[in-house]
Length: 232
Ligand code: DX5
Ligand code: ZN
Image (cartoon, rainbow, N blue to C red; front, side, top):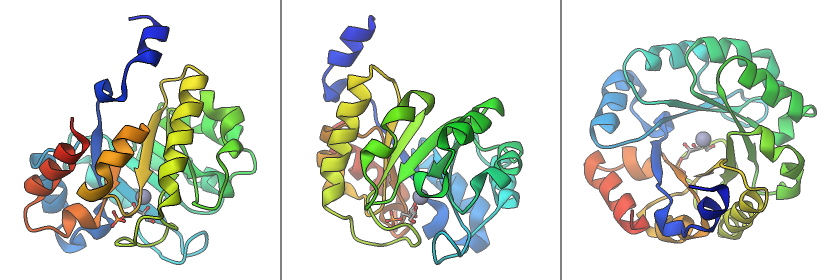
């Protein structure tokens, strides 16, 4: 398929992937929880790393990524909500991260940081807080494997989807397509079956969901309902 035919293909043809965020899992039974969502049809495992500085909450480090790597075959999608992420990128890469996503707000030398991730054989992601404009990533989009649009202010699970994020996803899709890129477009925060259809139509390809999956009784049913809503 030529690049132009890929670019003009409808959103309906674009596959979607579901990434349960373990932030809402039972950490005392983390291996079981990861294996349960894998069995329920998850495509990636989303791991939220928080430092108590960039965001008010504090979560996990490379040791937990390493532990997760041992119990699943799924790619590990590691979201770094930490200041000076370049100080810890080598450790997170060695721990077995498949994607490492950094915030533009924490990276004055974003181009260099993305190179640093890719040099270690890890896919490089970049993300924006709800208040950060998309044009901050426009010049380096070609260097990224993934663009994550935050649809809540990062720090906690179970928050409400910020409605303006939908239009931002649409604009991000247009920006990716205008540059002829194959960058994954991910959305994180308040994602559930109710808003999956609109987000999929706006062009998102990876859907992070914490409370919508781990807060449900039946993970398989929760993931099935999300896919059904997206229509693919
Ligand atoms: C928020 C995190 C999210 C969080 C999403 O800071 O980046 O990944 O776990 O949780 P829900 O899906 O419950 O909004
Ligand atoms: Zn996240």
